[in-house]
Length: 352
Image 1 (cartoon, rainbow, N blue to C red):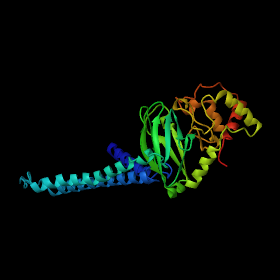
Image 2: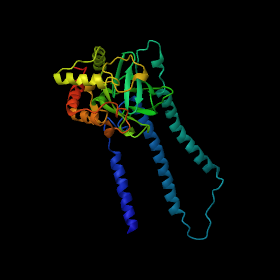
Image 3: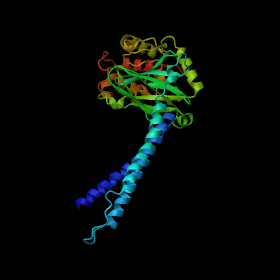
């Protein structure tokens, strides 16, 4: 009975694994690629899987054949094949061929994906984004456009987007599963790579992808998410223009928002920026840029984008992201102050 119970458990886990392997959303799963880099990596993964499964099948077939065909029936010693040159050549050459079949496309893809010459050319028109990772949030600087955003990366589709990656505290890793990656962000050097976002598959995903930190970095590592908005080139250019048109912090639209703006200027402005300008050194990036906070899809990268969740986050950020750098950085606020501050922040928009 115990043995039967074990087999039932093993069977259940095997079926569950098979079912879960089919799960995945187009905005999140590496098994549903949405760009050139992801396609290349997915093809290499399929190739290596086919090779491994093929080797396993061949070994199993040989094992079963030998097990049943050459079972000992009497004391007769079967014909010995030790030292057979033909067999030695076969089981030496076949693994070499399999390794070549896997190695050649892998090496070719590695050099192709590592080619970032275009971003280093003088007067290059390539879109370059400086990614800066923090505990536990991200900011994205567009040096040629003179724009800085936080927590939401905006990119055009159907063209290469180049990234400079660096960490400003501990080691993190930049990963957009559906589009490609991952690449480490280090504190002492910059890593560079590129991605391309396919327009058709971006539309299938609603124009929104999820990015994550893929390097264990602290208690809130699993909550270090960011969102990626994939737009057509025309829409991206319109977004850039709207961001560049914001020269000063947006004024409050209501009396309650005006009260919230005053609270923000007295409590939050020391860490947060409310202008898209990139004229700030890395050492000044203490907290996310909130210029377009009202346009975001998440609060702190993990909560629904509404006033109640925003108030919950401000009230007790440690509850939602343990170890974050915002905890205990400002005085406790009353409910009226939280209402006013949430009203102001939700009104920070640049897109019409």
